[in-house]
Image (cartoon, rainbow over all chains, first blue to last red):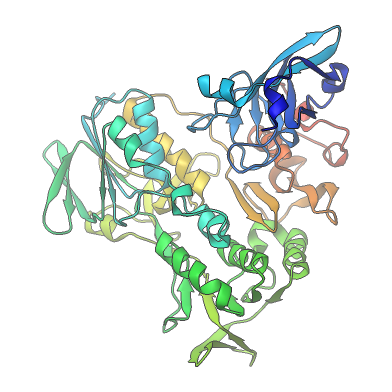
Length: 115
Length: 415
């Protein structure tokens, strides 16, 4: 992890309109690659690299309110990052949409350990 | 409804048993749970053995699926190095007879004994490897880097994954296949050709229509001779010609076997004809209500799903909807996935670009998708699954059009 990630706060990453069509987008925040997903009306942010085998979640899909990894079809709760039927958990980040712009607050590693 | 059993014994420690046991505990099963593993290894996943593990990208501890700590926490008795010989009906319950004479009393038994690698008669020795379990994989991993060239008999999934892993390690590969193309039944001629090209462009010497006639040891390895007079010299031979069910326990227990596909006949809930005895995974020939016949599948996802089916049946929970078969094969950094059941009379519609190795091939019949082959397009698989299971009418144009969201093609969008 880059040292500045812990100090970075809300970062504007993309207009919400860019998520409308494909419902997903890869962005980079403080050296961290993050996948955005539009599920219903809410935007979620997860680490892009799947905890399972490292495939890119932003090349996956949203199905039945879950994020589906393209690598091996693991499904994740977009809010908690918890994988269905698995012990693993995908890191998630806080999201705020202000005036049609998606902002992400990248979570530091310390914060992940607390969850 | 029958009461929830007090003791469940799972014979076999692969994906099906592990999935059943995990689901039982997750759903609050409070009875005794015993898993019998014949191997001494902590239960592990087999799919990585021909891929990450073989390439050295993962070690044994990275591929475990049921760690002893979880078993302690969840009160699961994991008995490794333990072989079960037979299941007998004993009054209202069952008895699982172990090698050595001990036995276990159980209310329900899951037979998940899996399959083993098929062997070619007379083909054996210290330069011959059959890949099935972790010990086989460990041996192959040790021998592979120094082999120079390997010969692989069989271009099925295991054979081609071993070939791909060997190429990624810089080892030369000659692969001999009896059929005209690899995975022909699964992929159909067009995509089987693409699959063959993928291996050829990665340096695999693929030879089709070759019947192996003889294998002989040489001072530096083996020589494989084919019926048409071809000879391949290699430092190592990998035999990957399919698998045969481990049905000794089933036979000794009087369970009904599938005369065609082999394995134990079970109903949609994985029940054998003997009350309280289930079978799941590679060993089970399950009645598939969609296909209207018994089907035996040798893939990891099938084993996981059937394990979960058994757990639900034991707990009296409703079953989930049938899902089309799905499997993956990671080769040369590409994620290959197949969903659905192949049929020979289908039209192939490609979404994406075959030459870029970034596409999904949909197999259409009567205006409906019945199978799909995705190459680095795992994102299309969820939609393909739904299109297949719902039998949604689709047009070739819509499938091929990258601007059409596949999920929008479904009758109702639940997302």
